[in-house]
Image 1 (cartoon, rainbow, N blue to C red):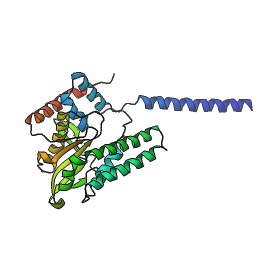
Image 2 (image 1 turned 60 degrees about the vertical axis):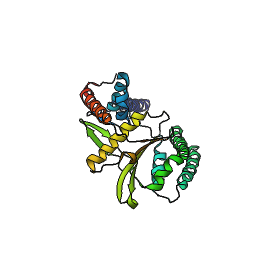
Image 3 (image 1 turned 120 degrees about the vertical axis):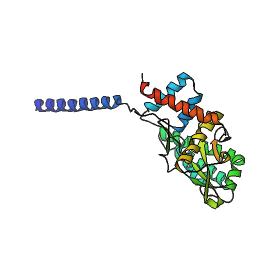
Image 4 (image 1 turned 30 degrees about the horizontal axis):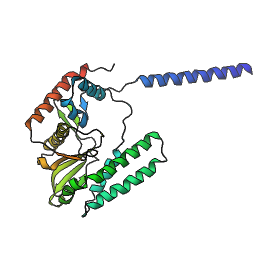
Length: 261
């Protein structure tokens, strides 16, 4: 009887040891992006960054963590879907944002830490949107807006570097018949630099020129920096194209040298 119990104990210990070893192996597995690939925001920041900051951007892009926070994604979805309703009275949008902000805050109370943060961050972003009515109303009252959030895989290659370039909303005129521009929302607490916003708009505008043969007017390519309460439009500056191309060439040539310490 004692021998049988001892053998069972040894068997349990062996299984636990195997599980621990499996967990250790899983922890050691590091996702590596073999070909140069950056998010829209990473590439937009790259030309303005110091050498140390550039290395940080590339390291994070090549060795992404297993966990990617989505603290403002609910706000982004609510904003895009609400604007896509194309209400005749623009004030309704901002009343809806206040209503959704309160709902998310209530939902957050019963959730665990991470999900709670997601709800609270999105609630805060929706409250900030209410302060943007005066600068957004001319757009809302002039154009037809449609969500573009299903196109999450939209990307562009420049100098062999793959860049995410999804617009949040597409802007139409002529009653929705003519695609004429795009909208992108930035939710970071730290304000975007003007050039960073212009770089993002340049990349998204270039994507549509290449893939849809649509040439947008600069004034209809718009980025909204939500927490900063600022609106940027695409710049007519040839230097942006030069900076982006040079940056992508540098990224392409540097990618294989990037290692994680």
